[in-house]
Image: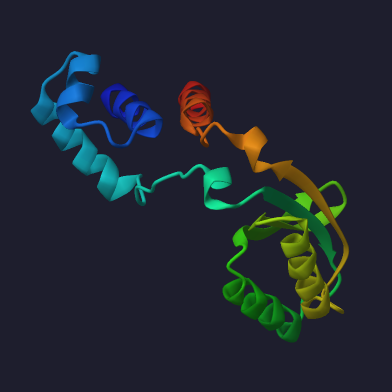
Length: 165
């Protein structure tokens, strides 16, 4: 990735609503260069733009990060979990990996602890003979007032990759 594209990506990560003209002024280049590079990034790197709302203002009071261990990787178990994930509007991310003695992560949003409890009861019923040791870490959304910010992490990873290759 060229330096100009990296600089543009960082600007878009900070504020994707910035106009090409505003970014061009910040980066001391022409608007047409920014537009051309933005289009290239949108074809190759940027999957989509999205709004990041204040979750607490939408009535979402709790973010739960749930971990568990897979005990059955058969087709039936995978199908049951796939159906649960697709039918649960609470889940914003789920995946399999390794760490802390766990192989499953689910990130979910909840209106309150009662909503979380209902969600977990459904997850436990669905995941019988699939997952064990389900444990959650909670983040209240009022402590999450700042929006998600990927710009520093992306900048670090891009620079690290460029310096190691």
